[in-house]
Length: 248
Image 1 (cartoon, rainbow, N blue to C red):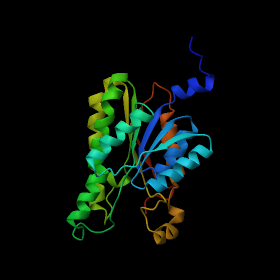
Image 2 (image 1 turned 180 degrees about the vertical axis):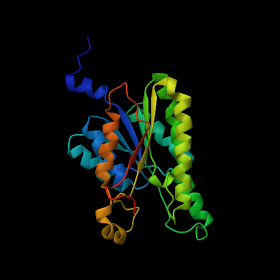
Image 3 (image 1 turned 90 degrees about the vertical axis):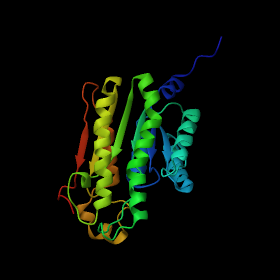
């Protein structure tokens, strides 16, 4: 007769598996820390393996479960390979958080074609590709969560953010349509629209100048986890988060 599993082993066996892109820093890192703190197994993805390993080590030191899966989300084949590795090492993804994002603070006229393509590839195309990888297992199990870390720029006009705003607005509509297409499968799709947040997306000078007008990445992550932990008869479809003093 096989040995019975301990209570802790049984808990780990049913721990939700959370895949976070852009998990090496900023909001992504804080999301990883917060989801690990509530007992989830966290799959960390970003381009920098070294930075991912630092986050993984920090989570493990605090008693959480995390594993690094380096991935350049501009590469469609890399996304597919990474998802397969996560399935092999941790299991089926039950929570996808598309957090990877880039921008260029310049006018539309000044934006190069290469910058345009990079922003659209990372912010929108990768979101589409990641969604497609996790949906089959979520639909099969009739359970899943998809959080899309977007931006208030998808809803508000800011100069020198045209391509970034277009990518985030595109992500918003992609997710809104998806929500209706898969609602019957008990898969929750939540759009998160943070305002100015103190991350490396802003340069050091801006972070220092506007520190009193920015949210912390940890606060944004805590808000997302709170939504994830809402009672089962509630679905929060979107969260708009802004600093108390408003947009910069």
